[in-house]
Length: 289
Figure 1 (cartoon, rainbow, N blue to C red):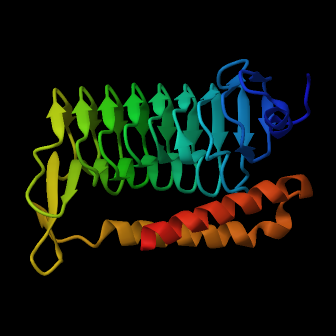
Figure 2: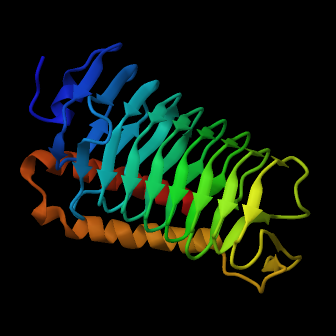
Figure 3: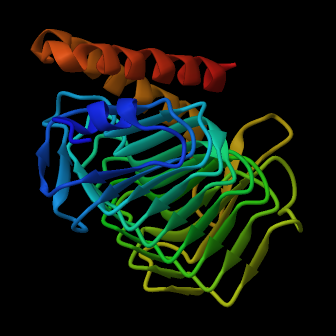
C-alpha cells in the first residue's frame, strides 16, 4: 500500500513487511516503533532524509528488535543520522550518514550489525557505541570532527575491516569499553590512531591484530589512564580533560538547539521531534549518573 511519507509506511507496516522507499528527498524524522520490519531505499543513496538543521534524528529506533535500514542518505540532522536506543539485533546497511550535528550512527543498544556504511563529516563521531556485542564491519568513516569511532561503554564489540580516516580533533578510535575485538582496520591521517581510556593498567581483554595505523598526526596508539587521585594522565601526550564530560556537554548543547527549533517544525513532524528530544534527555541523564 502506497504511503506519502516514510513515517506513514513504517506505521502501516506489520512484522515481516518491507517498507520500500522511492527516490526523493524526505524532510522528516522517522520514529520506528515496530519490530521485525525492513526499511529499504529502492535505489541506494537516492532516498535522502534531510534534516535541514531543524530535526533531531533521521531514524530513531526505540526499544524495538530486528529492524533493517538499508541504502539511505541521511544528512543535516541536529543530532544523529540514525539513533538506536534500547532493543537490538538491528541491521544498518549501506547508508550514507553525513553532516549531522552529533554522530552519523549512535547506538545505545546491543547486538547490532553496522555494515558498509559511509559515515562522514559529522560534528562529533562517525559512530558512537554504548552497548554490548555490536559488529562494525567494512564501514568507511572519514572526516568526522572528533572521533571516527567513539566506543564510550560496553563489552564484546567487534570492529572489523573498517577504514577510518581524517578524524580531525581526536582519534580514529576512542576506546572506553572492554573486551573489544579490533581486527584488520585502517587508521590513517587522524590526529591519533587509537586512544585507549582505562581505569588502571592497559586491559589485556582487548584484542588488536593486523590493523594498519599510519600517518596519524600525533601518535598511533595512546593510553589515557586515571591516576590514584582520579586525574587523567595521558601517555605519551599531555593530560587531557575528561572525555565523557565533554561529550555530555556537547549533547546538552545540541538538545538546547533542538528545543529552539520547535516553533519551526511542521505539525506532522512535531510529535516525533519531541519524542526524540525526550529520549535523548533520558540518555543524557543516564550518562550523568
